[in-house]
Image (cartoon, rainbow, N blue to C red; front, side, top):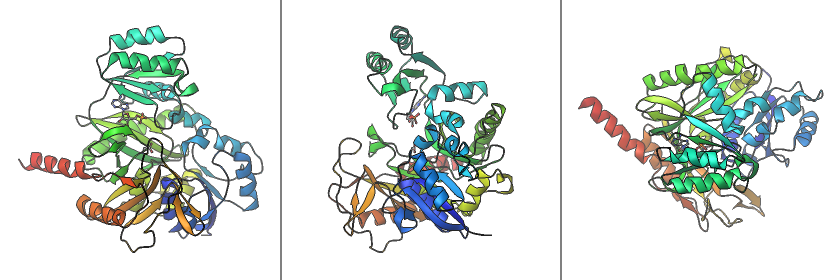
Length: 439
Ligand code: AMP
Ligand code: GLY
């Protein structure tokens, strides 16, 4: 079959991993990334179009005979990139991976996604929603809550919209700041107060054409900046796939209790969803509870998940966009993947940019995915908080960790920071599970 011209939207590590995987496909023709980074430039051609400049995307697609559009980040989806394409007669024929504005509300509004889960009997934490002006009611509610209290800003808040605290006074102060519009702007004018779920988190990824679906390899993310899960939240400092406790029995529960009701719910509500669904789950005593939906792949989870997919990614994405996914099933690489994020010193707070990255051409067994990088006068320099994600693949987590960290050791720039413990907790957990099994 003929290779396709593809436009991928985004500029992070997730997009480099998607582009890297698509490039391996026989069906990948000209591959463009808008706007991309220094890493995507090595497997595709970068195009200087912002992720929410839909008009320029439409023009580019017409001029370059684009036959498939793949949307990486949530922002263009929540802003309606799919709706824009579908309403423009000149580009409406191009298949798109990514839901329309209504489907994207699963991520764009925590209140929408909570109500969706409740309507379809999907297990999730109990929650109550408060609107601007309801500060007194929210304070009274917090007062009778059993801490920790979980506050969630309704709208997109760049991964920072969740506050968890044991201190009810702090919770009241925070929700007051949010509801009055000062904190998180419009995104915080509606806030959910949620029951705290005690368990281990994992991320499950589904690709659906609205009728059929495939479950991609699962992953565990490391959200905090510091070793041992300490310090402030980040976009994610590392990822591991597979996840030891996500055994067959647990994944069957996820499929029956979460994935199927989610796809059926979308159908029942007339939402033609074609794209990724990232399900953030808490494993509470062996049972899955949904913490959140995202309408895209995870970052850095994608950098651990893509190397474990054996399928042709272009075929899968085209089938998603053209509603022919029922003919596909996922073939997984049984090896483990560990991905370590290398960040700018100071992240997730203020950090300096423009540092020259050394070691990118050194031989390594690891796969180096770029996130916040750009080319500048023959050098690759830092432009973001999360700069690289270095993935090792190995027979088990220990070998994959060794390969990833050997790759990390060859790379350097002024102020570089990374966690030293990505995947370590899973080794302890595996030992505990096998002791329980044998003992
Ligand atoms: P979110 O932005 O929804 O992914 O939430 C950020 C993080 O907060 C999650 O990854 C969890 O670690 C934590 N979290 C969110 N909701 C809950 C909850 N109900 N119980 C416990 N932890 C939670
Ligand atoms: N790593 C978490 C996310 O992509 O939302």
